[in-house]
View (tube, rainbow over the protein chains, first blue to last red):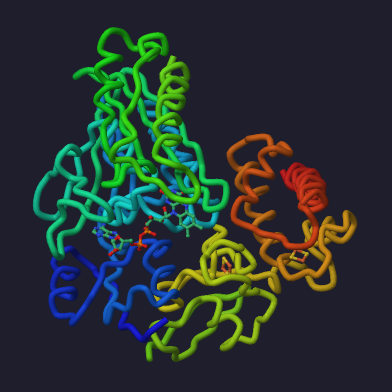
Length: 265
Length: 165
Ligand SMILES: Cc1cc2nc3c(=O)[nH]c(=O)nc-3n(C[C@H](O)[C@H](O)[C@H](O)COP(=O)(O)OP(=O)(O)OC[C@H]3O[C@@H](n4cnc5c(N)ncnc54)[C@H](O)[C@@H]3O)c2cc1C
Ligand code: FES
Ligand code: FES
């Protein structure tokens, strides 16, 4: 890893100032993506600004039918939080499938969403549950947040403070892990929400996470696996690599969506 | 250089290190605690697992400077004098290692999973042990005896927890 200068930010203003003063700085949260990339010398920021010490960045609060998760809350905390499980259990079920126990003890929801890896799990949760990304500047609805591979609506220096999720009527996440990396080869989150069904797919899109509109339309006729019989996803625009062809990914999306709807009950 | 102070295996330590020093290098190079191993470049193998403030983490993927004030426990810090930790005894009894390279990480991960499941009142089944070992790779054993060792240690540790109540 190349040399770097570490800063521990005490406040959002402090963090923005430290990043602004740096030649080529980056924010740091759990480091489970950024430090791993720096070790490979694929990233070489001159400065790291640690966000984890800022007040209010960690924690889960339930307010009626909505849940707000601080950006520096770890995957392990999300997976095991009883108050969250009582309202939106699918978030706990999804978080426990990320990486391994040690990665979950460090990795954070904000880091995962800022990074927007096309095979990451949280993007499917935010898009599928119609969450809102809350930053130090504004609130960004899920449908406007994800812009492409490793690309989001965040501006230079903008910090994710928290993510807010409305409670769905029911929802489930089904992940088909890549047998080697355990990232999602395909992951599908299905949700029956007050505004109709939503189906978000990660791991498969050439432009990152996306909503499977054909499946959402089929589910509008009734939130059941039977509604999905005969509905399919076009393989155009899906990723193909040594692990899976676009056609295979398209097939898996259908299978996982049906399993998800059945699991959501 | 930044002065980094933390508690390692119950002892206060302090060293001036470059900011890019990984916790594992702080432990191995500065403190000469070479029981914590480095098996990969990709945060995947788990040979480097230690506990920070009671939780298992991969010490190859955390900066020492970010852990100022933390309490760190390594494989050197779990035995009670000459009495090995029940997890160490179980790896010995059940032949849970061959070359031993992955073993420190396996043992630290094993202790962490037993503690977490006990604290949450969940049963650590064989399936759960295998799920929890996701981030620890062993090139030698084929895992069966590691799973058996963790299972045996879990029984032992729950007996001890009950006796202490
Ligand atoms: C072995 C392994 C397996 C993994 N498996 C999975 C998996 O199965 N599924 C999955 O989804 N992920 C997986 N991950 C990735 C993991 O979830 C990371 O924790 C996550 O992607 C990044 O979170 P972090 O807190 O570690 O962020 P960091 O690595 O610290 O930062 C990542 C990026 O986000 C930026 N950033 C961080 N926080 C903020 C913020 N609040 N506001 C703005 N920018 C911010 C940083 O500048 C950086 O660019 C795995 C990682 C490893 C090492
Ligand atoms: S050395 Fe840390 S995970 Fe391999
Ligand atoms: S005993 Fe050799 S790597 Fe596990």
